[in-house]
Length: 554
Image 1 (cartoon, rainbow, N blue to C red):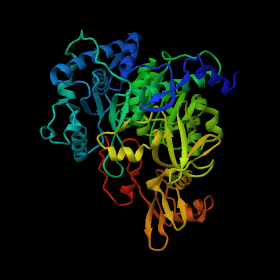
Image 2: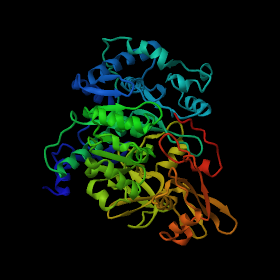
Image 3: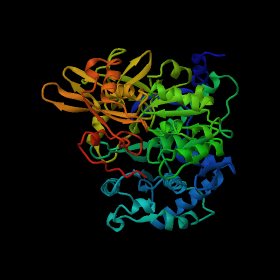
Image 4: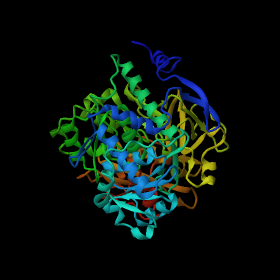
């Protein structure tokens, strides 16, 4: 069997299918894949060749083929243009639960050279009004439930309600061809909003180049894993991917709707609030092979009391992102999804880096479960101090990344853009981590860092420790003010159903495993789940009492 280095040379060396060369990206030379699509519409055009193969299966019973999808996109694109005057550079905002109309609207806008904007479906009225005003769309596509949160006429923009009005766009011109508007790879492709857990959300502008680079990196990684296991690689056809993350998030949109379309893989989509039982039924019925859950989704499935009733053996690839998965949860995943053991993965990325920077999977994940992996091809990662100096291996500092995946800018916010993207187009992530033997280890968000006396305390370390306790379902750690130390550590703990852990026992459990200054001085046990946003991030400013939870779980 070839070594990993030999496989990389075969794939990305001179003459390889993923040959890496140096080219200018927005004025900065950096490594890129030589062979790539010129824009995202090219991916859509090629997808029609998959014909009657199923592209999209929705849990409400709808099934849409690749050919039908391409035809409907062309019809809707023509409706956008002829009925609403949507043209290149215009924004088309989408505010809806996951559904075919969301995906079709996305591709229709893109094919016109317009910019689809994913508005957070968990936003309340105030946030929706802000998002619409901020992106200034030519058209808003929304579902009834979310549009009910705002005064629609007061938005000052044409609105199509999916339930009552989208059918006319779907059937506008069944014989339409896709637009031929000229699109350049550094043109804006989408605007996705940061989570807005503190302050106003910012609109990250991802270009056609950014999203295509993500697709290429994901396909490269998949081929590399197949070659390492020996045997001929197979793209599409036999695979089936379940998508439970929202389309207004990079995982649902780019890794789901875009990359899976490019590779001809059947997709299964859930709509509405996450339901662990419904997910297990879908995995069994549709023989799902790939799933990328977020937040507490994994925990809720693998620990569901009825998990043993379902045949989940079809799952061969399960991955999550953002932070390492606690060891106990990883082991439980291996028990519930035994055929995915070799293909479990965890990655690190952010919206501003078009979803991905590093990935840890397979045997490397088993050996280094606390790492989020090595940088992927064409992607560089550095750790820097507050003055911007690159730190030595093993030292903790702010994570920076540079690649063709780094966003172009924040929409209409040059100041925030300049603060985020430095010389050489290095992106400041706002996350704290370290590199060791080429692997990235994420400590925390800078804003979550607790400063206790002279010690830096990273909440994620304490959270993982607490979540390894058999009586703890989930935990969050925040800082509270202290007149002498500056801050002390507070733990908010949600016990597993039926458990009644004592604070004294939890304190001792942490003290036996972590340094004294990391042991929480304040404790809160609560029955209700931790407040989270739609992408699974805990709203720590809500837990700290600094704000109310504005998100509408749906």
